[in-house]
Amino acid sequence: MKQWESLAGILKTVEKPGRYVGGEFNQVIKDKSNIQVRFAFCFPDLYEIGMSNLGVRILYDVLNRKESVWCERVYAPWLDMQKCMEECGLPLTAHESGDPLRAFDIVGFTLQYELCYTTALGMLKLAGIPLASAERSEEDPIILGGGPCAYNAEPIADFFDLFSIGEGEEALCELCDLYESMKRDGSYTRSAFLRAASHLGGFYVPSLYEVTYKPDGTILACTPRYPDVPAKIRKRIVADMDRAPYPEKLVMPYIETVHDRVVLEVYRGCIRGCRFCQAGMVYRPIREKSPEVLDRQARCLFENSGYDDLSLISLSISDYSRLDELTDRLLTWTEDRHVSISLPSLRVDSFTEALMDKISTVRAGGLTFAPEAGTQRLRDAINKNVAEEDLMRAVDIAFRAGKQSVKLYFMQGLPTEQKEDLAGIADLCRKVVDVYYRIPKAERARGVQVTASVSCFIPKPFTPFQWDCQDPLDLLLEKQEYLRGLMTDRHVRYNWHDAKVSRLEAVFARGDRRLAPAIRMAVEEGIRFDAWDECFDYDHWMRIFKKTGIDPAFYANRTFAEDEILPWDIIDIGVTKAYLLRERHKAYQNETTPSCAEQCNGCGANCLGGVNRWCK
Image (cartoon, helix red, strand yellow):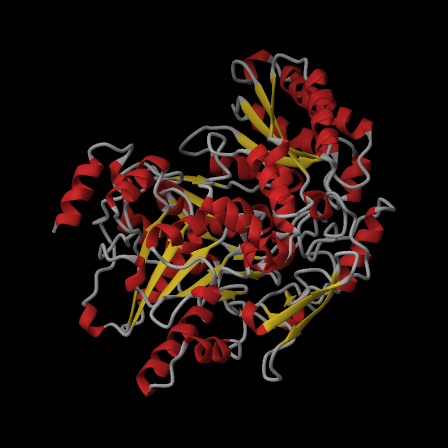
């Protein structure tokens, strides 16, 4: 009781106490006496970001459909709340029950981006759970990681007991079943459970592998410690998206979140092959939902939430093969109920006037496109497969329909980039402004704003550019300054990402197990929320790397040899390394590869199966 009195007092002093109170409408409460597996689903960032995450919503629903499992939510407390909890000796707790994390059987983290690592480990520290897997006792929870960063889990391998590789709807249920059965028959120990979990498929247990290195610092081998442990871990997928579970109710937050809307997942995978894009490779093969299923799910979620915004999401929504049929179905009821439909991932080459009319029926707003590069040569090298004419046609349609703002995403530092490619970004933005002013005054909205958002290239695992280096920091900064000098049109706003943040992200993205001491030191020294400007401290990280004997350039600024063993080679995503190498070689010849809709390019993802119309 004293603990709760302390918490009540704390909530009066911190920013946004609604982040921590729990008790939301539609949260799942179960009788503990009937529960065999307690699962804490942790999101290592703020409540308002985690509450908007679709993966958390799906897996929370999936696990709680099992009668013997109770899945609860946990979010990272902001700095003020964390300080108060540490001063009062309050452990990190779950939203639904208010129980500390140490009371759970499995504590799972979704790792959406590399800069959440210190926050995730900080949550373990706040919960009183030992950071390293080897330091945990039989009484400690099993610590599970998943999400995009699990595809190269090596930098944090020492801290997690196991990782879920790929899609978790079926895999996590199997893991819970295994835990329950081993507890029931008395065979459970941490080591026995982890060994058995490695046999399920789609689970990587780092402690079951030994990594050795060559004198030059590259990897010599990653070897299973036991003959029954798989040499490679193949990712899991959900084969039939129409049959895949999807939430019928959403936990409704008490405070405003990043995405207060109904989110409808239309399909998984991507028919494109952008050579810098990890998601486009690791989420293959493409698997679509039918319009009938999507319409039913949209109606259900609208009726159970009351949200008046419906967002159709995928990696490239305009590539959905039945988009016209789907939007026509949705408009039969969304217009009358004043529900807006948003399509946040449109491609310029498939943007049409008919589509513009459909998404503008209720609410006006800006549009976002991603040319990625300023010249056609570089767009060909990265296999973007869009032309300048496509962009000009798309913005002309948007401006004539009354849109006043367009946001364009670009990347700097891409492999093969030249100075003229950077200059092309500014030139392309000016051309978009010119399109607006070529429209007769009576047919356009008043005023125009073009925003160019330019990020730094980060070489990611399982992409054709995984072998390529990131530009050194001074060159990234020089390019940003050069581009800033070219952005002279008052109608163009130039936003750029912090190059120092991108460099740290590149270190973690291509890192190996030797980064663990640095990450642990960072956590012990209080580093958290690296993705937040007010918390990020590049110089602090550089001091830590120096103390732990790590050269960040070895990971971020080195071109990996095509024949060297990569830290993430232990994982099999279906897409073959041979395909990725072919794509890399084509990039340096400025050659494009057709989309999956045009022809099968033999990436290898068809080995995973799945109900899809693309793989041959």
